[in-house]
Length: 256
Image (cartoon, rainbow, N blue to C red; front, side, top):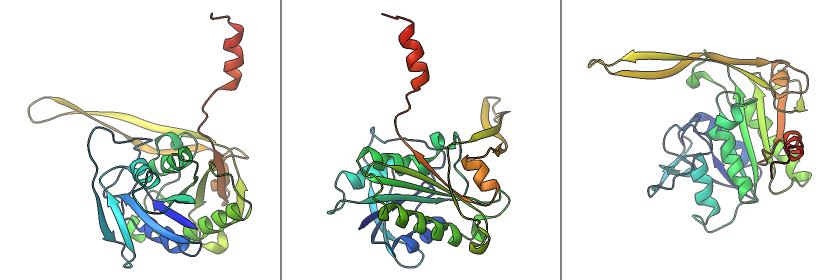
């Protein structure tokens, strides 16, 4: 079993280290991740410049590779033959914040898994619902990594289709307080974005997109609802974004 590990927070992130340690129990692991933070980069692919790939090591000494491309670039490089062997699955994470609802369209963590599916390889995105005020350096990624290993192992045992995408969100709880696993749908994310307009010393305007942390609607059966109740959320995703109900309506318009 050949497993590619990546993320959108950079190769030195402790969430990637925790995930790598757990995935090594399931097969041969190759790490290729960005050399810097690409959070909220979405499904970006670098086509206008060459990319560099360099060897490095994780904090525990495990060999890894890093690229100056983004998460999707890292997966594409691996799928297109950077390494001598093909891959059976891609596991991305652990993101230090949940990726629920419309977050999946922004998330480099999730879109790395989508890039795997484009190459007909199973993709898993792992995210941790860390309290916003908790520093990364004090965050325990262990329970999320172990939960991810169990979900990935179950998916393999049940022969998950090769182009499947699973978004795994884990509540920030100790192992013995996680209530279980729920298969969910995408919920409703509530964004509290605000535009912060300022001027530089020469009087020219510049802008930050800021605001309070997002919340969500804790609806039954959704990814956000599962997290609120202390469950691991597993949401199957697909790349087909067609709105089939609207598709049928548009056909009735006789646009031709």
